[in-house]
Image 1 (cartoon, one colour):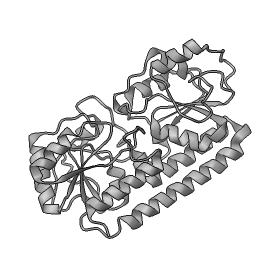
Image 2: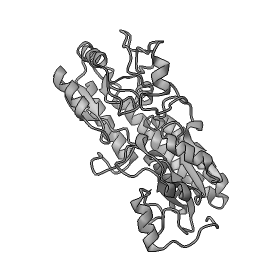
Image 3: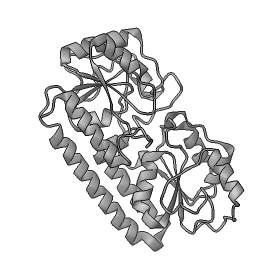
Image 4: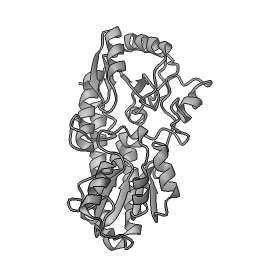
Length: 338
């Protein structure tokens, strides 16, 4: 669809793949990451954005993900080749605040359609590793005990420089917010590629329907439980906790690489005992060492709660919906849901 493109040789395609341009399945079997595809070419920042683009775009889009399967998206650094190829795309779909190098590259590119998922829903502050009060936070059950001295500092920028000034970026883990983003992406596709607007509208409606069904599964599946508290390695699940009246207690903050303090570990040991916590959750794309250490010290078990930042051979499912349903099963077990 992009008239500026030139034919790219097979050798060039191999070089592109080696430099980390993970291409998804839609309309990509014979095409380069930013080649002459004859489709509406969308560059997505990482899996949750690529999944939306594929489901909404269907046969009309060629989707390329900047983050390869198995790569931790927080750590992505855009290569010069990826920056150049961004300029050849018709649209970029990303989530500002999660991947600073992506934000910078897209901000500086001349790409015509830039879709920031963070602008399509509301973002809130989650994800500190500070104190825990007896009430476990507000009525929604988000992470509790944000103290005034450290809360904003951790929520805005962690020790590794990841800027979360706009709020917690993990919106896709709340099916309701993810549906809001899907609707916005659908409208953006319709505007940018009006020849296929009817199909984009239909595909968006189908995706939103599926996300509403997923939301209902979580509501009913978690309705009868013995505890509201779950422990995770990093604070990715604040929106999910808020949506279903749970309390996430994270070992680290929004950045999965942040090391917890000794005081935080002791606090979590106390929380686990007081609140009937049975499980320390870890995720597929980062080390489980900290989770297993905490679990061993407290006599708890460990299990996977996947933030669905990428699909790999270790994922409990082949796409967003399958992994989220696996997450629901794990949470039901951990929370004693009946």
